[in-house]
Length: 282
Image (cartoon, rainbow, N blue to C red; front, side):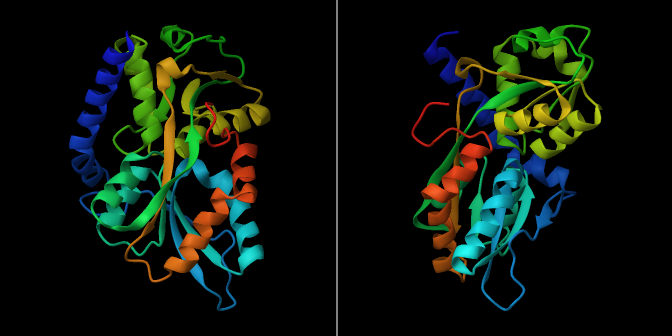
């Protein structure tokens, strides 16, 4: 598939999901804006100091569990985090959920917020560049490429729901582009987000999974599985964006948090979690 043809294919795929995203999310949450969002209190202070609220994509839990305490130590500002699929968090923000900052797993949702005037001017920035990886559980046949997932020896394959999770959309695009989607579709299992995909792999519920490279690498170190880093010709790169929200009453503190993550100390946490340095091709 040539570059222009591939770009057109990915554009049509993205358009399909964008048109269906709100309906899919509303169905997933029973018509409301709740759903499977996990709130964590890493770094939150209870001494009366300022606490900002952060909506963060599920792939960021490892990074933020270390970055937030460092930020609080430096500034005295606490952060309360709600993790979930970017699409669901976006829908909650559309319904005026009281977040101060939104960290998406792609650029699409942050750009939508900026375009709608719901973010502060120039408040949306790229904080990380993400890549997809293929993880194979210990004892499973080593697949050198996605095309080998059609092997009968691999019985179940997990990836995040593409209607809600950017990494899930990337995974489906990869399976379609590789020509194996029709073959593997019957044995795919969709998680609500990449954290749930990692849980499926961790418990042995599935044999293979498509998830962020950093998460796959961490899982492999603990479970002795195999990580296959997929070529950009299959998956592309996710420009992960964050944005300070216009309705925030703590914009100064939210901007300070944003600047911390973009600075040398904050970016070091991303590199340790497997994200490549900003500005470099992963």
